[in-house]
Length: 160
Image (cartoon, rainbow, N blue to C red; front, side):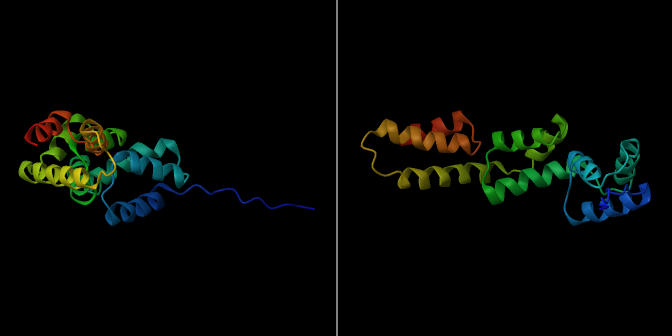
């Protein structure tokens, strides 16, 4: 009995480039996302650099633009603090310059207002804690996990 195993065919450089143009046009991507997609598409490794370079030249791929959208979006939608945003961008392999540019997208007044709002919500939601220090620890841990800076959190505690 003969079994037919269909091996994954390798795309030509032009086919891969066309697929990646659509991939990058659909949502902002970073270099790591594109490289990962190239592996998924089974594109020859020797073609990766040339394809990425073409996408950059055609402005489908721009790490600074990606960092700005990532930072602004994750702050507004997920209410992440700067530390968590920095960590997320580092995991994507974004350069320090682009990370700094991305963080500039976050308005300081909005940042402090969001931190204040999260602090207030968490402080009011922590129930069953008789000990004030235990409550402070829970609130602090929550805000640190969201990526906010310890010194900003401490300033909020000093106000109450």
